[in-house]
Length: 387
Ligand SMILES: Nc1nc2c(ncn2[C@@H]2O[C@H](COP(=O)(O)OP(=O)(O)OP(=O)(O)O)[C@@H](O)[C@H]2O)c(=O)[nH]1
Ligand SMILES: [Mg+2]
Image 1 (tube, rainbow, N blue to C red):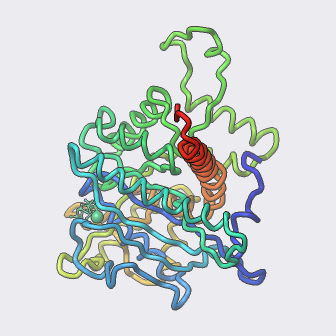
Image 2: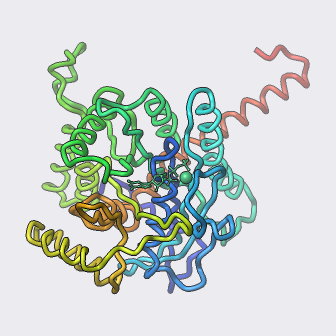
Image 3: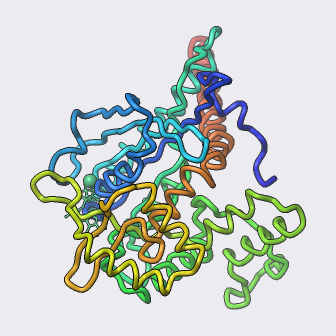
C-alpha cells in the first residue's frame, strides 16, 4: 500500500457501524471567469440522483438557483450522496476568483486562512479533555485549481505563485475549465506543458507529485538536459508497485496522472435562471450514434451508464451550431473521470493525505509556535532577555 491504512481514524466517530459515512470537502479556486461556479452547479446537477433526501444544505439561500454571476463571497453546498455503496458527506466550497495585481495576495491569504481554520478546529478538538464524538471533518481534502489558459505556452506568473502557495497546505488537483473552447490538440498541448512545468521545472508538490530518486540524478551536478522527467520517474515507480504488489492505490494514481490536468465542460445555463438549457434530444441522438461508432467499448459502457443513470433525455452540455458538447461524455472531456476519481477512486487517499501530510504539518507548526510563545512569556516575566 502506498498509503497507510488510516481510515479508521479518518472515518470520524460520527458514523455509526450501520451507516458509514466519509466526509469529503472539495474547494474550487482559480482566476475569475474560468467556470468555477458553473462547475459547482454542473457537479451538483450530475449528483441529483444520488443525493440522500433531506441532506442538501447551502450556506447561502438558493445560491445555485439564481442566474450565474461572478462570485463575491465564499459559500458552501453540502449533501450526503450514495455512490457505489459508499456514502459520502460531500461539501463543495466555491470561492471568488482571483483578479490581478496586489489583490491576489489578499485573496490567497483569505483562502489559506479558511483552509487553516479547518485544521485549527481539529487541533482545538484534539486538545479537549472530553472530545466531541460527533465532530465533523471539515478539512479541505481537495482543491480544484482552474488553470488560467490564456497562454498555451505555460502557467501565468500569478498561477505559478498561487499553485506553490496552495500546494503547501492542501491537495491541489489541476483542471482546465471551458475545454469546449479548445481543440483536441490544444488540450493535449496544455496538458503536456502543465505537466512539464509543474513536475519537472518548478517541482510543485500538487496532488500526485512524489519525490522519486532518479539514479541519473544522484550525480552531484546532473545536467538539465540529461535528467529524466520527474513525472516519468513517478509513473515508473507506480507501475513497479502495481506489477510487484498489485497495489490498487498505485493503479489509481496512474489513472489520475494519465489524465491530469482534467479538461472540463460545464452545462450551458439559461441566462435568466441559471438552470441547464434544454438540449435538443433529436440532435443529441444523432450525435450519440456518430459518437458511439468511434468510442471504445469501455467508454461506450460508461456513457450508456450515464444515460441510464440520468434516466431521461436531459443532457447536460453546451449547444453549438456544429455539435453538442456533453459534460459527462468521456469522449468530450474529463468531467466524468474527475468525478469518479474524487468520489470513489481517490476519495480515501485524498482524506488520508490531508490528515497525514497537511494537518500533521499544521499541527507541528502550531504546537512549536505555542511552545516558543510560552518560553518567551516565561522569560519576559522573569525579566530575562528574549533572544
Ligand atoms: N464555453 C464555456 N463557457 C463556460 C463554461 N463554464 C462556464 N462558462 C461561462 O463562463 C462564464 C463564467 O463562469 P463562472 O462559472 O461564473 O466563472 P467563475 O470562475 O466562477 O468566475 P468568478 O466567480 O468571477 O471567479 C459564464 O458566462 C459561463 O457561462 C464552459 O465549460 N464552457
Ligand atoms: Mg464564481
